[in-house]
Length: 225
Image (tube, rainbow, N blue to C red; front, side):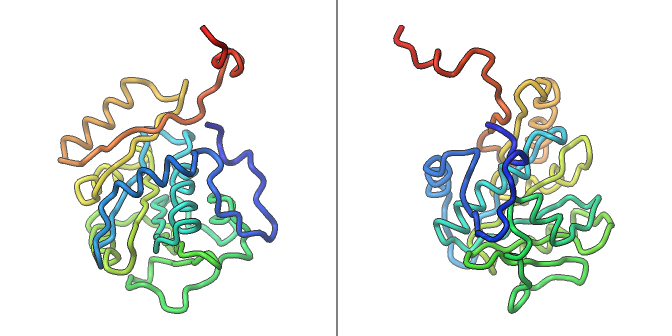
């Protein structure tokens, strides 16, 4: 997979399509996730370090769920180091800023949470409205409240090296997916992240290897043996 940051942000089109992960693979996983009425499934995407594409992979799943499949989906961006502007949010998740709008009725939440919807989709973003860190208990309470408002909640968690927040939430979500950067993530760092999540009784359903580079030309992989 390549980093989605290399893909230009569309000027006007609602480009809710997956670019890094095959849509049929995302759909297959989402169809396997139990759907419960008035009780959203919560999936968390988390890595040990920054720069391995956690936000890009979260965006891929949201594009398929909230775009093609029409599932009422919330992306919760937990990067509390920066209060994202609409332009920053659009750039981070590969969207045109003109497609972001305030919901007609905000989901329940405190004044330090800001919501944005993507027009012509069932996708909503939630993020901090101010530059401040919140206690995990605050986020846990909000996630539990939002379960009744959406069918699917995707958490774009900060990396372990930056914040312990994602690990602290691991036992409160239905499943975590580990993002591993090929040639970037050390084996010991990945094992440490897995250990910390499992230590808190979190459920890890798999890992995604991102940014793999083919040092051998890809065509050679398809040659008959």
